Length: 128
Image 1 (cartoon, rainbow, N blue to C red):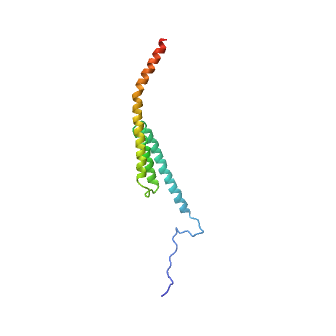
Image 2 (cartoon, one colour; image 1 turned 120 degrees about the vertical axis):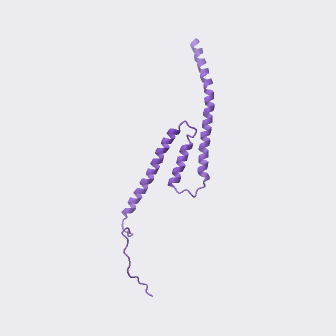
Image 3 (tube, rainbow, N blue to C red; image 1 turned 90 degrees about the vertical axis):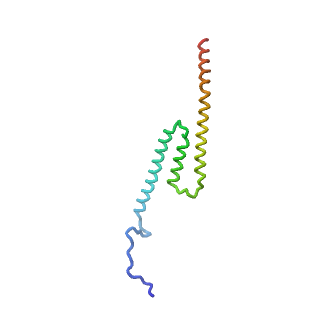
């Protein structure tokens, strides 16, 4: 039995020896970083637009939270995290929106009585 090998193949053209430089790796690294930057930029633009459109709605904090969770799942491999982590973030945002919405309704109910008392005080000042 012979351990010699005949008809050896040449190195592929993309092979780079240990002391050589690899320009394709640099190009791919730049493209991957540009792609990640593009994804983050598009999500941030959409988040800004959604936050502007959600202003005054009952889900003003929940929508940006959902977009942030989607961005995290898009970019990072978070399969090893417990799924209750994003669910708890969504529930916290929902509760913040719910409490803000109900607080606004209660403050809105008190506002007309404040305005009428202000008008009464202005009328008293005009009579003097």
